[in-house]
Image 1 (cartoon, rainbow, N blue to C red):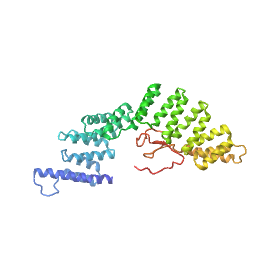
Image 2: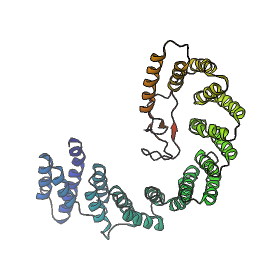
Image 3: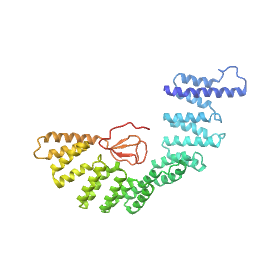
Image 4: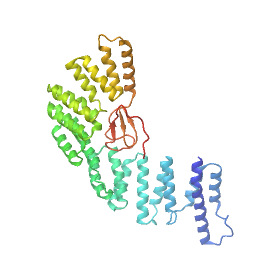
Length: 393
């Protein structure tokens, strides 16, 4: 409330000034206090902490002309920031209805009204206004950005692609990453419908737009798995892990499955050893320990994992080590280790597995578009040593 009162004081002053100026055009003013009853009524509401009534009075006093347009726009923005979208819409609609506005002023009012409609969830009305601005080339880039937000909300990915292509030269940003994800979204619909060939064509376009789009590679691997092409799937998944090591933990389970499907355990072991050497914070060591247990026994796996946890401590590694030791027949601390493993399982289950590198949003599952800051491709799998950090804007 106090913040709003401070914001309204300049409005009150402006209202008084404009009222006095108009009065002065008509007849001499005997002193500065003769500003009309409406002005003092507004001040009275303001002093009595009745900002809503004060706003209505001051808006009524500020008749729209070339000198008060900016004040009306500021009031509308104030309403929108406060969440009073209906009032913001009324102010901006009142502006647009005035024939005295210049072309630039009307375009600015249209932009603000479109943002009001977006805030109110009236996307169809906002879309029409932004299209009008786009066609008139007034506030062209801002209108396109808002249209892009609307089409993403509506999941109209073809429209998103068209807007991105139109916006790229204006924003001096080719938007390759965003375009790649739009292609992936379109491909995902086709995969669900069983149109794998058409989906693959769109994924190739995604990779053409952004060569490091691990999402497109992962989706291509999923298509290959649906077609029982396990070798091709493994190749695509490995390429995704090489392009962006942050996603190695995400693709490793399927890489392991692909090698097992083709009975290539030697190739799997070689790959896991290389992955562990290049990215020790991934869970490659855990899969390698499982493979060692399968080929060389539990003791060998426990020895390997003990050394690995000592060099690269992690919750997952400690949990698996506890499970391995508990399975050894001559171990005396079975109950303790099983209890420890249970506690670690609970901790891992409660711990978010993904974090947005842009805004710090934590998630249980992978989102290709961050639900918080709406950035594409910034949500990454967390490593065991990825502690909460201060995100700089």
